[in-house]
Image: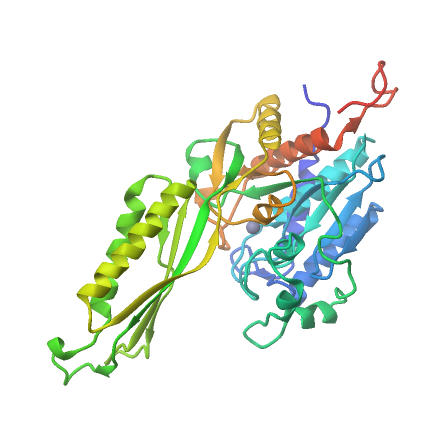
Length: 424
Ligand SMILES: [Zn+2]
């Protein structure tokens, strides 16, 4: 038996309205972090919030918060959130879903005149995508203390414009110290960005955590020479060794079904059709939901690189780990609450580990956290074609509502319940 449900038409129309800001062909949206389009998207969101009379505030990295007050003034809030910035060729759901469904939860509680003991906030984290300014998950990283505020503010885009420049230009420079706004719990609704839920015909992904990730830069140093006059045996050509490295990386990922290996960047220098490259730089991204498996993958990778380097003494080959993120385990009670909500509403659900990074991974460092996934068509995301059905959006938002209410403490009034009193 469910007491109340979100207004799916309102939520859907808000998602479509938001998509018109920074609209690009083929149903996509482009709102790069702190660009005018991103600011316009925030303004639209704020207008909806202010229309309801919710309190709004922001911090010095531009994270935005909206509050529907609870009765216990000093209790830490239950925070729902995600991001409004997009990839250059972004879709309509990645990020927006979690923010707009958060607002929908607040409005649903208003519509049904439901009070909660704790505040429920909606957070819009700055620059989740990391396209214009690196790294990704910037706002939540500063908020949770994994990134330093001064260094992050000084970060520049490819045109030399800093995060700080944009925050000042758009009036976001006089906010609270990040992290000053303490939170009790965090819940993020998001599209899966992969094909698993759709293939398994599930409506809800009960997200138990996130994969561990390690990034490497591999450099192969050879010598530039003309493609014609120099015999093959006399060259210091790094490309044959690159082929061995590519083989190595993809063999490592065969360890089990859950592991991933990706070579996303291969840069040759000077990158000319008739020049043997003098240098190649390769990026390697290794992931696993199991830290010990990933440790083993890293060991095999680095040993393999050493073997290739020994067999290619005419080259200088080096691999360096440049970033890592540990396995994230979400809060057991909150994961159980998501499962319970899906069960109560009869939504087909399964446990899933997030393959993508999310602001929730940062939040999990400072507060009990969980995520809810819904399927996206063909598993496609970071693409204009990204699509989630209205039914799945509705289901995800209802699970968000139920989970938020469980932890915010729904107050049942005497009129609603003959027994009266407070209930969690
Ligand atoms: Zn996202």
